[in-house]
Length: 228
Image 1 (tube, rainbow, N blue to C red):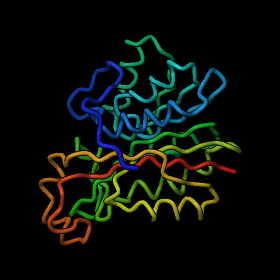
Image 2 (image 1 turned 60 degrees about the vertical axis):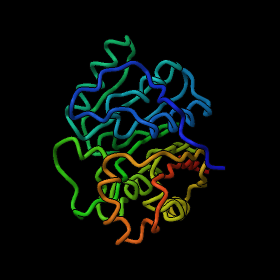
Image 3 (image 1 turned 90 degrees about the horizontal axis):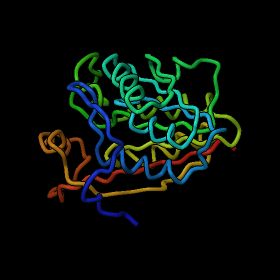
Image 4 (image 1 turned 135 degrees about the horizontal axis):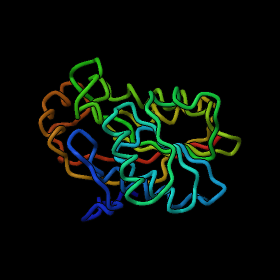
């Protein structure tokens, strides 16, 4: 069943300065899925693309040992500041996905990656838009997570990440299965188009990603994949 988005996004209190992704419905959906996992003092968690650190801080409040990674320095510095203000211990690293934790492994990997299909095929290297722009099909980062996460998961380890159905749910499940993970969709929600999708409606229709007329709603999914 696909649920409607909550009336308000319930996030930890944190700073999100300009240039750092502000927690939205996708953050809440992923946080809800994370709360259903067994997270405690013996859990090692990797947050890929931490933004301001809201998910990393939620995990830390449950007692987990958390490593947060982001490719954008403003996000790294914001996560460190929010951890300091919350008096929570996080390991925060600047890096490109799992390259920053080579040789390490985790019980749980979470990610809210960029997933919005964009007319430019190349990804931005700076600016606020790098938090959502994901190439022509929206899969530039999603595919990398599918490919890289298995190498940092321990046996029985779990990958949880969120993305839009616009970039292909079945493609994600197949890619994870090909990587040896048992994957399924565990959370879904319908949310109204935000400003970026509204501005790209015509282009998305031309790409075959939207029907015509469309209902102005985007389906978000949380994918859970376990290493057997």
